[in-house]
Length: 82
Image (tube, rainbow, N blue to C red; front, side):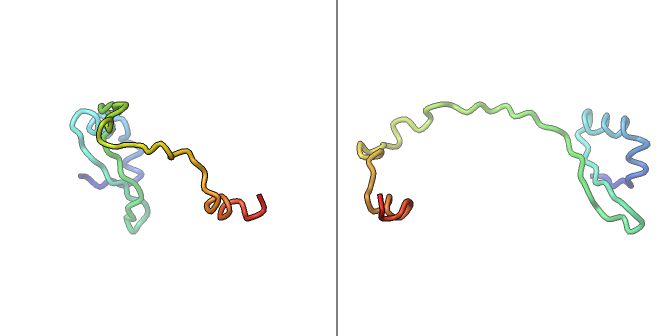
């Protein structure tokens, strides 16, 4: 990980992006006279995992009463004047 001042970052943006892309380098961008760390430039990682539909099939069960309404819960949400 390298720290770099914002002025140097602006002037060398193309070469910095090449380092990030090709070498996986990480940069911390500093701002001002006190070198306050304000941002980090890291390589972008493409998500390769695909969510599989039905991955919990056979592991959980949904009761037949799942969609049934409860008067007590309806009263809590909507008030008792239904």
